[in-house]
Image (cartoon, rainbow, N blue to C red):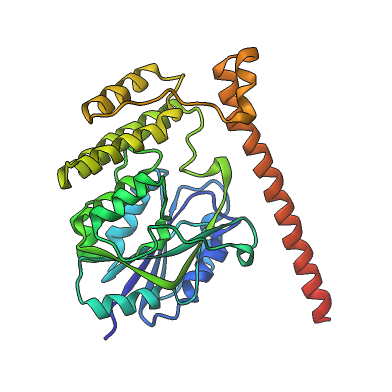
Length: 341
């Protein structure tokens, strides 16, 4: 009998997207699956939409709002799968995603092997997603994967991973204290508990670009900034426990430098703590520079307002781009209907 794969979908106010997400899960070519959707106290029609898909293999549960990490933990408590597929309520899986990764799992026969795949951003039209390979898109040891991630400021989307139950239990639960980058901290623990990462080149994930509504968006929220720094310190500790060589220390400093702009200048306490941590690692952090498009604002309006503009204006740009992409999607649907007639 083929291993059972549990597709776990935490959902909050996702009525616009969750139907497409569930359909992409149901379209998987892998023969043995269960789908568990946990609605985290949504205030829209997310629960009602999800319940339309309920069946013997699709379970829909609701709870009072507890946050994404707690919702994911609840979904795992309910599942029976030999392998776990995490899937956010607005993202999509290619039809053969799980099947291609399970082929590798069956080939290597280790429950500690972690499986990954390629991913690409989209807005409303997944057919326009462009898959661009990074140094993480290959078979790697846990340490090499983590070093490449920080050295290149790279990212692997949550749904790209397929994780055995044994490895999931070894990593421990999602950290409910973290309001941002909770997936980064969680999968750091998964990766360090693994015996290596195997990349499935024919498997794909479509990651919806949702802008400031995304959990990963920090902005100027003090709570998210503080949670981000807590997660960063934890991950630095994890990595140094694996190896504390010169390359590891340099990667940690690079990681701190990458995120320093999220704390400067509004949180001088965290900036100082980051600088001390970098110094203990044998490095030094540079004061973050504004992008050239916004640096001219600093002499006129000060760094704080220039930084706010650097956060706000790209959000306006992407809002307009998403709106236009939605318009194009509607035009495509109209054209298809006319051609069908």
